[in-house]
Figure 1 (cartoon, rainbow, N blue to C red):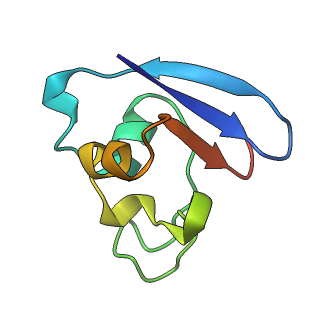
Figure 2 (figure 1 turned 90 degrees about the horizontal axis):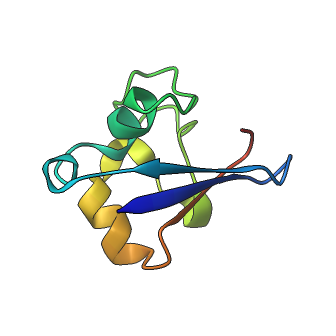
Length: 81
């Protein structure tokens, strides 16, 4: 299974794979582990709001599974990529 990461400034897209065991991981941690740079000065505490993606969602406040439920087309939009 894959999700698409799309940079809104560059228009560039990358696809990253995930497996069932990844679904419970916090999205911020999952993306970083897969080599996607996500800004966050509060280290995932939800305070700085820099890790936001589309719709104002914070990657530090949802699991990969929760993201997929909210975004069935499996696209993550980040400001830069």
